Image (cartoon, rainbow, N blue to C red; front, side, top):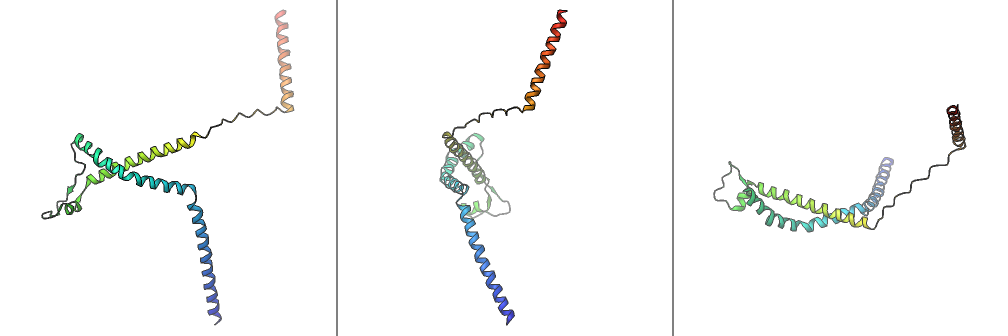
Amino acid sequence: MANEKKAEQKAKEAALAGVRSAGGFLKEFKEFALKGNVMDLAIGVIIGGAFQGLVASLTDNFINPLISSVGGAEVAGSIRLPWVDYTGMTLSDIQALSLNYGAFITAVINFIIMAFIIFLLMKGVNTIMNIGKKKEEEAPAAPPEPSKEELLLTEIRDLLKAQAAAQEADVKKS
């Protein structure tokens, strides 16, 4: 009976510790979610999604036909697998059982265009954010005052130079 109470007490303590850690987890998640970087990422995802249709249309309707006309290669091509019997299949079934390299090339072109557009957007946003900020150059700090020892050594040096100059002048006169 005593063992059962101890086991029950340990189970309650473990459950209570789990609730405490869940509360800490939620607090930590809230702090993470409200940081600026997460919001920036969310905005980037939304903008990227908005441009996806535009970029796909640009690629399908302008870039792929240009590539096909200049290079003579069909961008929407596919390779049929030699071990598959395609007789009696519909076009969608044939495409499902073929290596569609054209779709992959189109996806790569779409990715490059999207990356370039997002790069330009971020560059523009950074430029706009830096317009209001003036970079102030820090004035160089004044050199520290020389210590008494440095002042004394400077005076001694100057006196020695003056004596040496006077001796040279005396030598030249004689």
